[in-house]
Image (tube, rainbow, N blue to C red; front, side, top):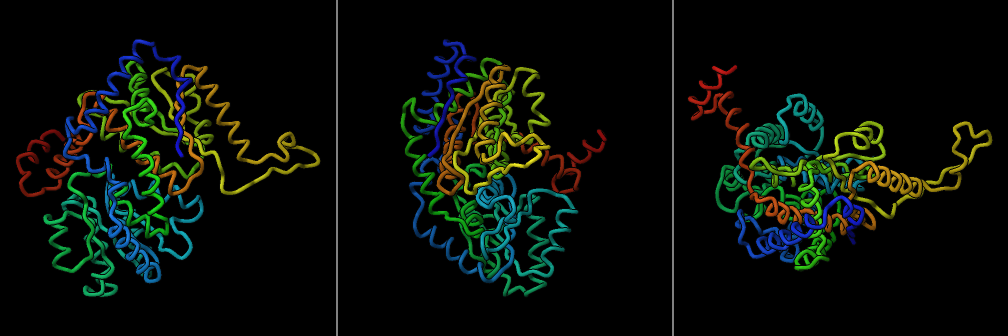
Length: 442
């Protein structure tokens, strides 16, 4: 179960600021759960865990069983929330040296999230002599990065095993009735799953967008959804005990005192990509209208030897949110040496988990004393249930926090600017006038 502790933060927030933020947090909670705020057509994620249908889980598990013994690799094609959610959960559950695979399940790869020629070339080379399948995630089927990746990977698959056989190796997660990918799927007989109309990409981890790749990697999506359901119930309470409401409250109270940058900190490398998902969730949801807390991340103790200096002594516009894991799956104990040349015999007999916990405590004490407030989330262990809880908690808090900032947490108008320029420079039909304007600037 996830727990939240922000008692060390209160000394950084004047009482009147906290009380005002508390009042605003409850108003934002009411907007979210009453569906009265901006973007209220995209709240399908709110009750998604408790409403996940057994038939959907069974269909996803059936694909995982079929491909388990049929393919060596599955490429998940998507960008933004269409890949980060699945990747963050798979990375967290896989472990550092398991290459995104559990037992004899396929190797889960990702494409369509960049335009790097070397990346795609290396992926095509890797797949040339391997049996592989494709999961393509796109509402429209025309988003540039995923569409390019799908065209290239589908061509390789069809060349290797034929067009007809390829239909059984491609699953599309797309719109229910419209769009280029829906049309292609219907024409070729691809199995499909639906991206719900009322769930935006960055809130889609608990839809087939995230659940299918996670199941293909060999993980228990039922436990993931069950954990999220537990947190859904906790986050639906209009109470100061609601962890999502409390987190949104305290981070916005800090923002109002000049803390503009939030660093999500982990002490377990498995959570590195969880931070990447969190950064997209909050950055794309809150960074609007000249407002927003800038989401950054750090992996400790590694980054204490790089960013640690700035965090300790730099500009005091930052605060940290820690995710601490209380139990380790494995036990590693330090031995003793006769000559004690490295000076570590004082730690002989101690487990690395205990050493790491002392590093956590020492770091937080130093940073708080140095003027950096520290919020702390604790989870029992890294497993499907706890990760499901964390995912839902951060989603719920993001909705509340966005409304506290006075922005629509469910759109992303700024993302379109680079697309317009890119299309104009690429010579896409319909962008001729924009192309002419841009060419005068370069």
